[in-house]
Length: 127
Image (cartoon, rainbow, N blue to C red):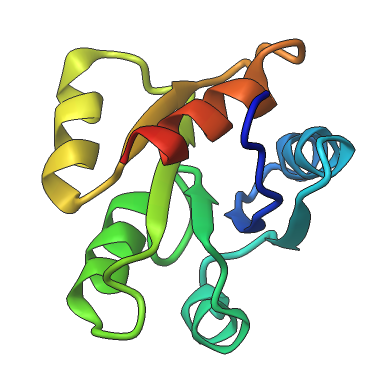
């Protein structure tokens, strides 16, 4: 990819397999990745780590992905971060809700292992 820049990512997903898979795929492309299996303390870690992009699942116990996106957009320190929702909820209603909450992109599970990292890179490059 021409002009490639390694970025720092933060992934929130309560599915440990999806969490590790996304991290592994992005790390294989040279990106730095932090992960969190619960949304409960994600905000504090995101503020501390200041990633370029956050990837979040939609359906999680406690704070769901849409609420996390809203909270991130509502804080001055995190409002400019790229946010991508990664979910199995593929209908247009969920995509619309994610966009309304402030997500920059929307990707579906199950992940396409061959194209996931490039899809993420395309979303953050387009913004």
